[in-house]
Length: 594
Image (tube, rainbow, N blue to C red):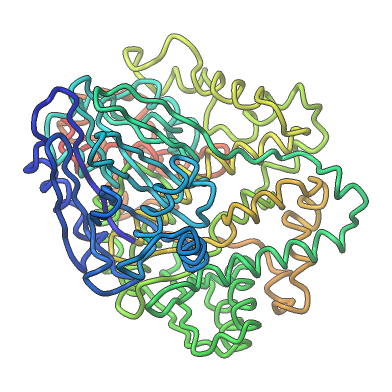
């Protein structure tokens, strides 16, 4: 919905308004509809607005509630803001706008840090108490909306994007070696609170931080899905789970239609986005705009899934837009995609989402997406091998099927100076899998992927690429109540029928059978998966740039071998390993990290 920024001083100095203005300006793409600034002594807040709810000036930010003595900046959408408004009015609160931002402020005044438990939606927000100087910052349960931090003993800066913090200046841009190992092991995922840079951290999902005027703070994790069986549903059969799943998803989809502007759907032609369209059609949504994308074929791979998206669009009578990306847009699109990244990401989906969002943003401001279904419902092929693994062997089994590379391969790829003493990725997974809950190896993997890997890869990818064009993406499969329900479903019901079995069976009669029975698809960008011609030359240029040679992250001989055969080295899950190295260097060079 927006881009937020701010500075909080702990040394009695006045907040640096110029730095906040630079951060705010850097996020203009996230909020093309307006800009705002507020400062009071030790705190300054900035905001770029994408007007979705309460399009009037009353909904502008930073929002100052003089009656409550609060100032707020907020990125996201509170889907139950109408219901909360009525509840808060019943408790005596008076409203001056129809925005969900004001609802957050009143909720904070009424319930303090517990206000987050009342919010249904995606959000990152900061609330400042004028009288006390206390500050609360919070992030939604699934980390759909980002919040990056540059922390020093004398001050804290925050922003919706990492490059915005760089624009403020005075950031430690040295590379975090542990984060580098995570990046090269977890498909570019760097779990919170780390980022690839030592000087920038991110508030973890489902976390509230309360900050005192002197800089002391406490953090509270307010939501954790259990991924274990619910005794009250012990007698449920497959049909019961199907009914509950569709009912919960129906609610999630309807919630995400809350807006004062039209809402469309990104329709890939897979079961997830097709089901979103089906449920909206069932609810009587008319003139629904849907969008799909296609690329030229390359290396024997098809570049589009128009056959299925068109089938769904015709079946439900949507206003469908087939966006065929001319090959001339793809190469410059790569550089635009890198510039839009808050952190380096490697999936070729990034380029697809970036170019798709560019065109979609010409028609609508808000879209729903099927993102997240594979992680919460067991749709990927690394889950079935875990089904027969004892819980106490889950770490090794998961590492074997999920890690891009294990420690011995990492030691051959990275120069010695960039290696940690310990195997940080394995230690991270071991600690995650040791947490209470998650009864089986599959449950442990799904919990980790839903709360960590999903947040800092697909979710971040969609947020970055859509917001680069002032387009807000909403993800009903990551409605936290839906996630809680699905987490309780026995793993065998999820893994059946080639993955997402319970969803497929629940979709019969709602979605055309051809979509349910098709081979699993993805956003294909063949020219990147099969590097050749100008795309390969772009990769070579990044890895041989003087900045890359000075940084000396990777073993030169290994890189030369990969450049000599650019499509031979693949990660465990089939990604082009050379592209992974090049994307990191492209991002570092784009952001002036020398």
